[in-house]
Image (cartoon, rainbow, N blue to C red):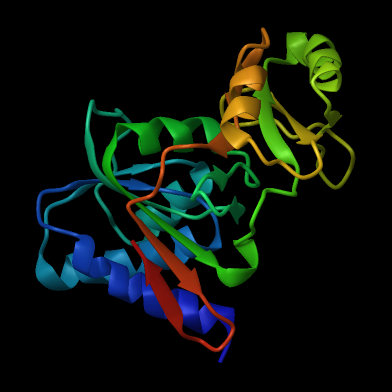
Length: 224
């Protein structure tokens, strides 16, 4: 049994949260991809009428394969969002943006009535200790990098394998910023957001309503 087995199992379990006529936000990444596959079969089997808002082209293509009804407009309220996370700390704060979709993911999460996060147990930490993705307008990359340095971080532009800058679906770049161990994520998030040219920070402080923790044994835990 593997993490993939656990993620498939928890994706099927999470379907019990899906109701007819809901508007559902679909996050990005491995767990979200597995959930979309399960959701597609579930909707077809039960003849549900739901609307889905994808957070990335990757998840949009997966949802199109499953013939889910997609909409591009983000409504004032989304019934439920299913998403993954790069890290989850002891306070249930999240680091997201490893796939580059942090801006749209944060919009959907903050518009949702309920947030469900799915991640394997390696993503759970006491305090954040990985790079924080920061989406930045390309004209501000140097000034943002200087301000990141002033508040104790080291930044680098995210690049593709060939060395070209990674460009988000919004046309921006991402600075991956190392702050060491982060004990006050909300304070750091607020400091970064005040920097001119920053469009989104990969520290999410909206607490999930439900967290699925996948284990390497193929099983999973549910944290509420």
